[in-house]
Length: 418
Length: 152
Image (cartoon, rainbow over all chains, first blue to last red; front, side):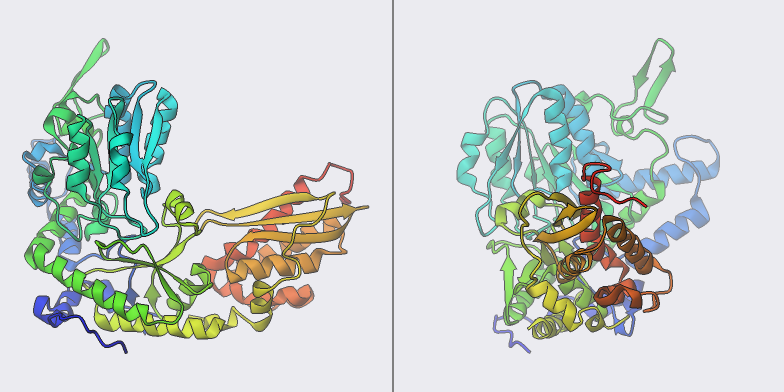
């Protein structure tokens, strides 16, 4: 067992993890004969009872379609949906509630911006700036747009540690840059990017920014007012909410100028054969019956996180990641991939020459869930000269004992493959 | 949960570490590749066919122990076989892997390929095993039609 040398408080002084674990029913289950050690939180987080109950209660007690009927349930459902939007807006410090658009997830949010704002703003000869550590979801929608418009995709490079090379920023941003879209936290490496600096550099050139907060909103807390970002996106299921719900935040002045994304019910003012007029934001971007229960579940997740205390969550997770780094570094043949000084709760690694898939099969046999492969960031993997990694991504419900189990299991795998 | 140790028998580990079949074979040859978008792994299989018989086979690429061992065992198994027999082998392997109740039955006739039978218990790894076989099928499809294929 690794001796934890850093001057750290006992984790239980920060957060009573045994109590927190009681909030997550799935953490009590076993995988085969082993207790579940869930270290795949970067792919999706488990759901607290507060979220499960909120969804269940909504369907059992208040469910009907929204914005439609004058009957009691429709009104109640509408109120709950609107209240969910307020909760989310409060959580990310959006200046106005209507700046929060409910979508299916971060992927849809980026597609929405690319195909509305992007389609209006980007023309032939313009460019779109991304970074070398983007998730495919923040690459492909822009590639499709660039192909359609004859625009150029530019890429801010990363160094071998997985840190953005900020020196290149000024030469990449120019008067033809129409958007700078980048991730707050790398899903593959855990690198925390200097968002404030990136936003300031873009805004000095008058370039709007889109921040992909899919891997940061659950760890760091987000203040869109302080960040002054034009767009910010995240998925509900990665921050303890249900699947199929996500958020696009956009500044009012940006959203108001954007054409509709999809056409349908709920987003129109009047429909005539001669033409249709559209509602104001947020409804303009929410065609059709939305994921009402999903939004309510997401709001419950955010209330749960607020109650736990975002600052406490961040401190607990930082402490746990330090412990994990130190413990896992003691495993023979362990090589960390991504060694940025500022990292969130993601540990990407290689184990000797053993392929990540082989590692994951052994870990699964001990109930340990990790993600392997390129983590939907193939260009980043190529840049680092590898095809993939094994990734352990942590949450505040994980424990030092679980890290010890991971380390012990990795040690066994190394001995097996010799 | 089946012990993953059963998945990695000595024969699998040996073939994945150093395979005599991991090499580029000299032309004339046809090539196919199999890839797994889930992990980014790619295996290429090249064969030389003479008179409807696979006279030589080799593989290249990057992959896990299972996919490499499967590719190596494939090359070993198909050399000297007719193209039609190789295709039958690929089909048979897929059927054996995907049976709802995995067992060692049916694998006996496949010789050393039977070392892959444990993978049937690990559905998440089926693609690792079939990667090279997809590459083989692609290579066979690339053969000039009717020329060297003995389609009985």
